[in-house]
Image (cartoon, rainbow, N blue to C red; front, side):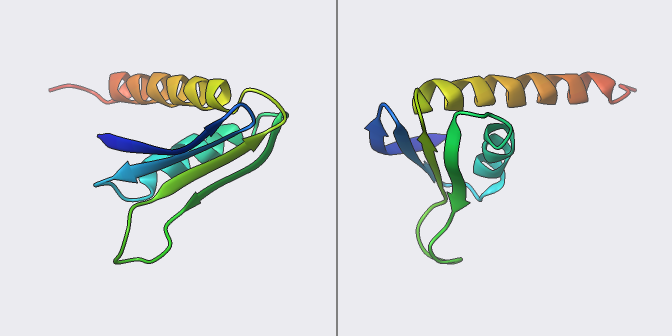
Length: 88
């Protein structure tokens, strides 16, 4: 996965996900919506056929740390899901 950091400030982070649809940013967004320090979070794509999806995060503190923690939570959940699927 290739990402491009559009904005990296202590209280805000904007990441562009090149070559992917909105699924990954939406998963991260769903975790961030549960965090009390998050003031705003959005997974957007300006046009269905142009550009790449972006994750926009505004936080009262530590936007990047919150995003990294949310990614870890998504990763853990996906591993649990994979383990729950029976292997033949």
